[in-house]
Amino acid sequence: MAIAFQYQAGQTPIDADELAQLIPKHIATQEQLNEWEQTNIVEALKWLKRRRHAEVLSEDFCRALHKRMFGKTWKWAGTFRQSDKNIGGDWRQVPLRLRQLLDNTRFWVDEKVFPLDEIAVRFHHQLVLVHAFPNGNGRHARLMTDSLLRQAGAPVFSWGQQVDLAAAGDVRGIYLDALRTADAGDITRLSAFVRR
Image (spheres, one colour):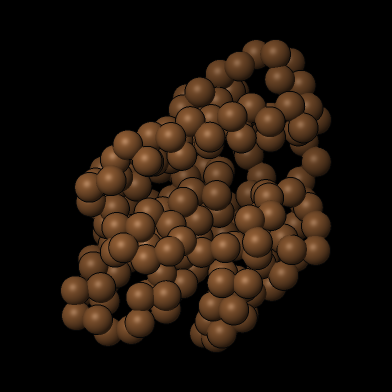
């Protein structure tokens, strides 16, 4: 059964090979897929609450969280992408770029290079840019960032007042614009958005 995808601005297209790995066969629309994925994400949030002492800045945690978020939806959940996308660069560089980001972030935290909120904003932005997985990278990067903040004993970000940033709308547009501004080296808009 083919899904009638309605891609929105900033969304990573899923290629035919990735789409063939959809687990639930009853899904026929983007809306059904979104609802199914959101149910998975709620389960991942419960899992996160039980794992208070996990090392967030590790590839194992990064992959495990993605698998928990999307493992009942996609067979490739928790597996690095195997193709190039509209963001993220060469897929073969994902493991190296992710390792560099995790190591850099650990250094920033340990050495207090930046205030914690700035570290978290930089981490989030760079994790979105790495775009490690075939899909779900923005949602995953937000939960990774919140996990990093929790691990440091800080309050999580509001992410534009907890609006569903995966859904089309004004708040999503503001978020995407802030990410694009960060791509150009200015994180001030993203910093303001995450605590909005």
